[in-house]
Image (cartoon, rainbow, N blue to C red; front, side, top):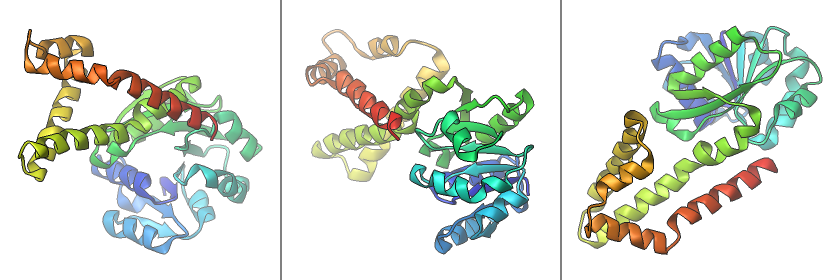
Length: 264
């Protein structure tokens, strides 16, 4: 097998779907392990990959292994499989708070590790992933890891000290955006718009606005000003958001997110 997963939850499934759809790997080249039988059977049915209940089997059979279990299980999983990890094997982690130094200590030997932080839009091929390698990963191996990660969205290589900020700005931020979409839709419903239509209008507005930031290269403030006509509806709404501390609330929320990430 070329690619293995320890853990077959939502993020693992998003990565599997992305690499298969992008033809980076074929289903038969992928194996996933999960102690939860319904979980592993689900990805087997969805993607046609090989599955097992043995983490050790994934290590033994894979060239690249993605650790996609929850952060609190990392220590136990590494303890279980570390003696089987081979010098040439590439390990990709996706756990917030688990630093390269912590991971190296857990493995207790030289291991090629790429620490990453993806987000849930990977499930629709629009993920944003940060990656940082340890000193044992070559440029070619990092490029290979980025090829895997780019199969379900965009990827940027960052220095490790930026990882906690990444958790706040992309890892957790889809939740903030979903809340914003929900609130906008609720307001539209209050004005008489059907619920399903309100979600569509709100979500498409967010999607289009994000695309403008990415594709025009203009500062978000400049794009905001383009919408705000003098004495118009938009500037009135912006004023209300400012009155209620919209931007400061977002900044404070992200700081709280970073604080928790640092303590994990």
